[in-house]
Length: 311
Image 1: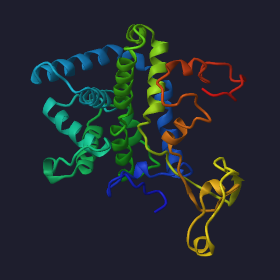
Image 2: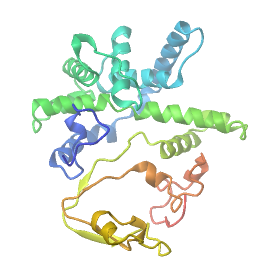
Image 3: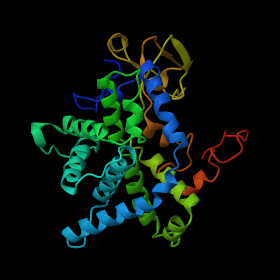
Image 4: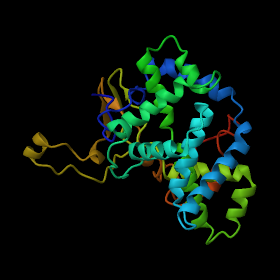
């Protein structure tokens, strides 16, 4: 299947399998966008502080003063998603199970934790929870926008509701930002203070962490609508194709020996962020955590400014 991604479980969320050119995705995106474009999320600043404090206090109390950072970030993110997008505050025991299910579903290398209430696997369980809290949500919250969309059938609406419960990027972004800032503090004494007090610098740290550790392994695939020939960016004229006759008949050439690349019509194209983010043609010292590379972020510089530089 063109849109089936290898790292996803067999029962993948169909909302995640849209290609970028799929009409269902285009419609869903148009349906979601107004909420995120016009919602003032600063009203949740105090709520965020409250949620972080509550979970930090609860976990450290039960763990003799210790806490796993990623676990804390997952609890905070999922709790806030439930409150902001679904208008619900889950009881702590239900939140505990939901965090385990979503961790198993989305966090690479999380071990299999068995069946969840009702004998369900992690995907079916969190999808069931998403449906329940969406049905019970008050008017005006995000999930109600999806449920009131008359152009999506019922199953697709609930798959989209579950999809946003899986949106754990804030947890990973926070985790890696804190880790990198703490590590960097050994050589930059003021980086922790600067990150806490300067929201612009903090945003640079978050962007740099997302560059180094992109939470999405690959972007949604696109399907080539026509055959396209392009220059091969990996072509190296110093490398020769030394395959013999049989080798040329039964094996593919080293891609570095091909001056041109041909993408045939119907080919599924994936973009792998980590490959681009560590490509030294585009980034200077890509292995280093350097928030200052975002000093001239295209979002804040003049849109006509040159961008033909390494970040």
